[in-house]
Image 1: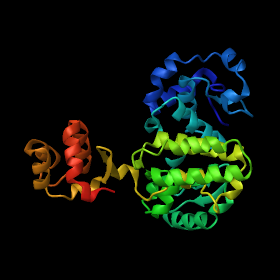
Image 2 (image 1 turned 180 degrees about the vertical axis):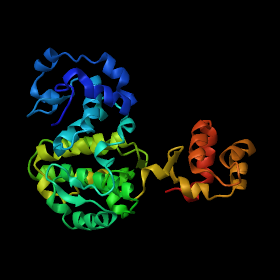
Image 3 (image 1 turned 90 degrees about the vertical axis):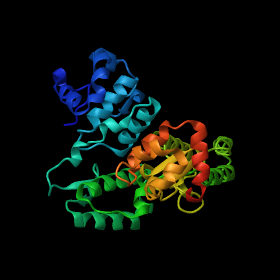
Length: 334
């Protein structure tokens, strides 16, 4: 049985979720949990409108719904997408919900990359590579929502079994950077496709493309990327151009996550993007000359630069020093 705040008897499950996801504790205190409130909501206020489950009508309930969804054994892909879109809309930090129950199973239990359809079973490290090969071969068969679910789940289960994945898989899973130049070109391609079918949304695509004319070359903000992919997904359906996926235009996932550069490995310095591990390979003497001995000692306490500490220290530098550092590192820019 799937449980959310509308079906949680005595809110016993909510108390468990509050321990599992501390980020929702304050929201649980302020959220109105009276059943009369839910009965007055329209179906559109729920992530699962057919069952009137997982309300999203305000920030508190969107967060609670996201928490409940993490312990659901089976959820339709469109419900998960609605929850993600709500989290982005309400600017909810989803890092506090990363430990999903269905990936905390004992070793040997099966896991399905498409849970509702029980497709692409993974129960061992060997299954991970077989599943990766199969989903790439049959990628065109899936909807955009299914593609996102499959690839994201594949990355999670691969981490669980410590199996390396191809860069393209991580790209499709939404963990890579967005090249805004490439993104703009594919949005313009959508404009042309919309014009051919006489859709008024052609002007909307044109406006979106123009927003990236002067944008930084790379974007790695996951919440923004998810929001943008969801927007393109909705617009493509309304414009009637999804039939062109894989031919004249890329689907929203490939359009947004269009590089092989892993976002978590990158760092932005004065508008330029660099690989943290590459920067960490530079000698400590370089950092002494570039940002001073005190900073250099902090990022390389044993003579070896720590990438995570490097990122933290750079974030504290004044803007003029960041600009100077970016100039000195220009040859290493992505």
